[in-house]
Image (cartoon, rainbow, N blue to C red; front, side, top):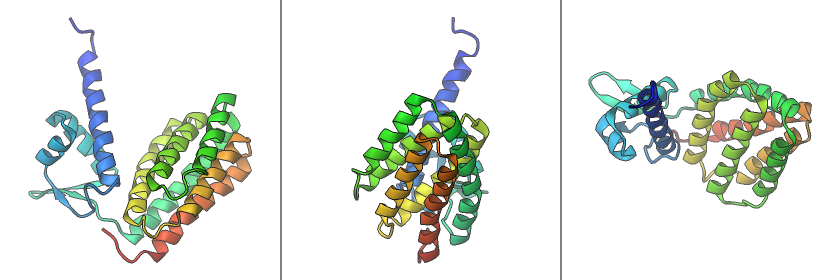
Length: 219
């Protein structure tokens, strides 16, 4: 006989799998902005059941990555300059809180992990996918070091929107600027330089702001 709560835990795990899979398809533009999609298509894309996919859809709708249209189904949320500027305005103070706490709280092995990720970033050159993978690694490390689950939960969907924006404008992105900014941020946190790390956040956000200001097309 299954232990109490085992089914609920299994359902939550499947819902998380569905969320991760669909979030990636939205961010990487496999599901382009403005596209109408059906629940059945999302189920087919994930290979998971209706219940976990619906739970993932609700979470993605709350994060404004998809929109529920009455009698029409679902639409991938379009990208707009105004929305991106609002996202960046909200993301900056949250990231500053996270890096401040991370610089203060990071353990030696965590600081070593951040320093190693910063070194690896220098070798990505123009490899967009490798850069995004390392950026994701750094963000997870920063979240763990900071130890503030509320700030991490609040910033997570904003990071998703920002990654989607990078995919949308990857041909215009000055990847060297993004690599430099992320690498500097990781190194400063590793050195426990919380003031410098907060300033580095501003530099990371500025890369997005320049891209958004010069963007001439949106999904």
